[in-house]
Length: 187
Image 1 (tube, rainbow, N blue to C red):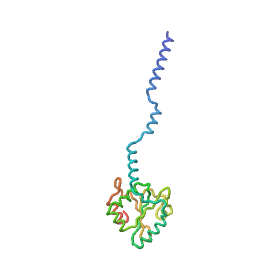
Image 2 (tube, one colour):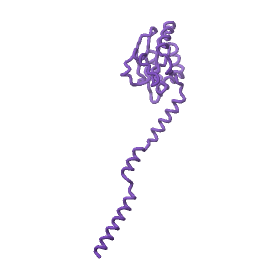
Image 3 (cartoon, helix red, strand yellow):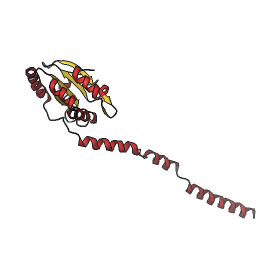
Image 4 (cartoon, rainbow, N blue to C red):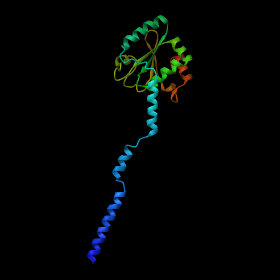
């Protein structure tokens, strides 16, 4: 009888234990679930940025001969007595597109640009990094933020390189700071 009770007890214990384990999720499965958990706020922000980028004009031309374009701008700048403002970046860069749009659609800023500068968009992208052109003005390996601005005098001599983050305000640009930059050629 003891053997029968012991066998029944072990059998029932095994059955009860196996039932309990089926109800508990596998720890490894729970870990996997955490790995693929999505942050909906981050996805929404990326989606909104992509929608905004799609609507903005794309001023950078990866196929352009940037050196020839800049040479032509220097010739024109000498005739017009203007400096040259080179906005470095690419159509991949939301901040580059935002700056261009901001300046082009803010009458006071557009007037300053048109009056004082010849405005050029120097492309940096996987399609065309324009390394030789950039190397004339900056250390390419040290540059990390886009857009940035290279201000040349009418003879094509570099006056100043301006980083853009100082011009930013929230998700856009500060009108006062951009105005100061355009008036002085630096901040």
